[in-house]
Amino acid sequence: MVVHIVMFEFKQENKTSNIEKTKEMLEALVDKIESLKKMEVGVNFVPSERAFDMSLYSTFDDEDALNRYRVHPEHLKVLNFIKEVTTTSKVVDYLV
Image 1 (cartoon, rainbow, N blue to C red):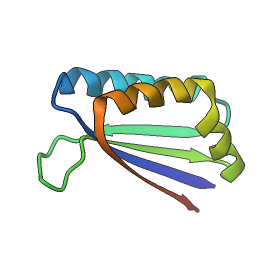
Image 2 (spheres, helix red, strand yellow):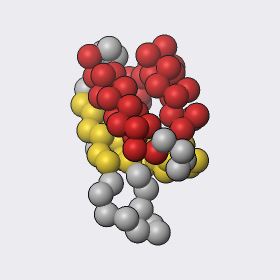
Image 3 (cartoon, rainbow, N blue to C red):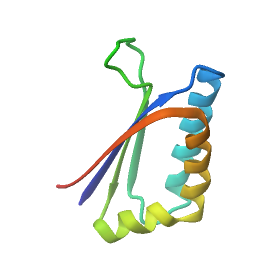
Image 4 (spheres, rainbow, N blue to C red):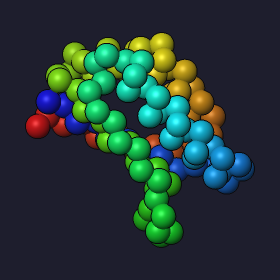
């Protein structure tokens, strides 16, 4: 199994609504992308200099499934929106 984790820091402009919209868009991908087995989207509630605004935890059967997710048109739509409303993102992918 492959775990894919991403953390996002959002721009200040329309931050709350953009976080909510991003969460909804990401969670909708579970029903649209077969290779995506599980997704959990968390919104940070403890302000800190070290904190990001949102995290994404998702799982895939293998690396090929993750790669299919990365190029899936529905994922790319969400990714384009995220790039518009965030300042920073960090990712880690690992095998379990």
